Image (tube, rainbow over all chains, first blue to last red; front, side):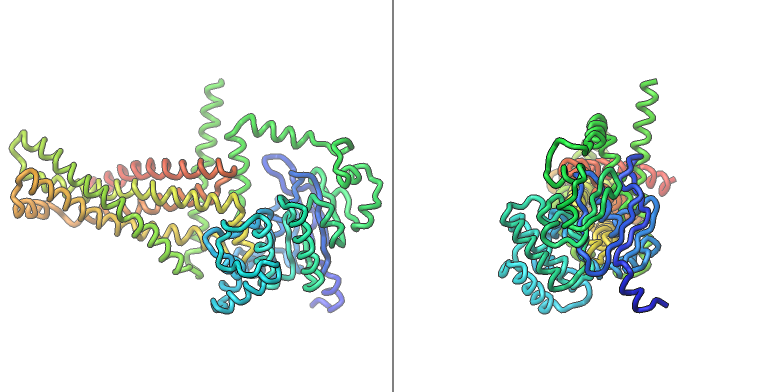
Length: 286
Length: 256
């Protein structure tokens, strides 16, 4: 039996020696990471560094080649599909493109989990409208996602991610493709959410704006490994040339782009191989 | 050597592509014995697959019956055996043309729609989103579609059989001056129940092929908008080819 003290100190998410590769290319290479309750953890890194694969492995959308992933102290990889789905109720996820269901109106998107849990329609609509008000989009409950702009979709996606009051929230590049004003709106919403709900979060970002706004810990993912893990303040003051190049967004510096370029060249050379590798990626999914 | 390499690569690609179907079928079978079964979604899919396919299926059937009557008349007129038109039309519609043509029409209409819809959901991460919202995508997306197409295919074929035979009757009686009573009697006298059942069995198998192939192509789709296009094309082509191959095997097995 676990003591109350050990429960307090137990990480919400714990990754230990996680490896994942696609067709011989190592995407995650010995990743170990602990995220404590209430912590806002941001993973930064170049495009194609494996950040999204990391989140998909934690969520169970992809199976790592080896290593353990504990969520709330449980190894989700050992659970059946039904058991994992039950535990997903404690998770919220904001996708890069919001991933709203085209066939449903906004309110049904937001209240999807609540409806599945058996909540009455009237109550679910009311809850969805409350969430829409909270993200600053009142009166759009009956619209279809196709009628919304990119920024509105992101805010609806955020409302959907938190509607069922999750303990852990994942954000996959929440500011990607948004104008500076909308980026600020989303950043403030996420920050307010963390202050109000004290959730644990794992965010994937290219953008230092999120790091400055609400991160407790930042991990830099580089060539499949965690290059460094530090606080936002430490990151700002870091003199490490690789980190400085990323923070300042310079093309010149120690960061190597060759492996990514080579991979792309290889994939371009044989379209059938490209399709095959992508389909292998999907085939492994649930 | 280059030729051997090409054959090897093509075989590998084929094995890889064909492997997707048993993979998805296994996932479906593992979930079949336990709820939730999403009955509302099954009914919605039945409406989409069955009711919305009716116009195209019935039009195909009626014109097929009419053409069959005309073609049979041309052939039988040479031997003075016009009275056999009714038997030939009903037998060929019940045994072959009904299930095969309905299968091809449904593969084009429904199979393309399944693959495009699921493919778009895959590339826009909506399938991943379902998982994060505590919902199993196989139960929520695949099973209702597969069950609906398997249930609806035999019903569509029964209606297509009836309308096809009616088309044959209309042409024979009103255009080729056949006696209506003799035509109806000849339509039924030489038929056996196995002719109807074999058509319905084929329809069920074709439904399973269309559902499995098009759902698998969409579900495992990759490569953005172009990938969705490829998946849709493959779903229709592979379903249609598989229907024709399965038709021969079933016919050989049933009537051996």
